[in-house]
Length: 190
View (cartoon, rainbow, N blue to C red):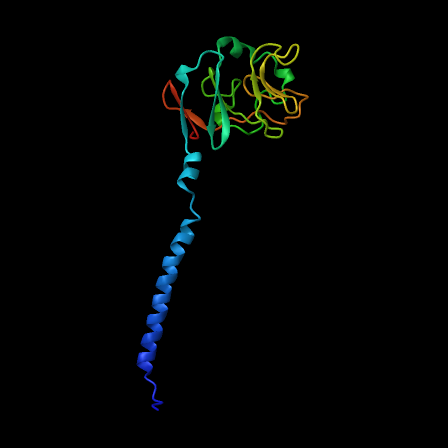
């Protein structure tokens, strides 16, 4: 038997095996790392949504989905806008001082344009979807109309501001949005 060891050949084989193993580990890790990236369906759920608001009639509400949550868009007529300042003492946060909306919604009507309201349609109490009840007294005697959460009785005005004495602690949230032109609003971008 030949006990002589060829060290050069051994080093070559060891180096070749390590390089081939590292290359194989790299190929195996590509799908694994790729699985961490969001799918195209997930990306689409978080993408901005464009809505044509020119088709809205005065007082009409449409609901669209953005990131799996309802977004309310309402065409508010002048008669509704005139009422917004009349019940400030009945509201928990009438001036929207609690920082929960973009700066452009930090006004009486809580929107970029006073005639178009854009709100996240999720009650700030337990996450229910409030009902749109715009008529005077539609929920109770003397109630000016707005949004009503039937699960626990929270009430919001037609700017999404919460009334005092209800379970909801905060106003309805205003999502990030911007107007692309007079007819189209993009939800999901400021």
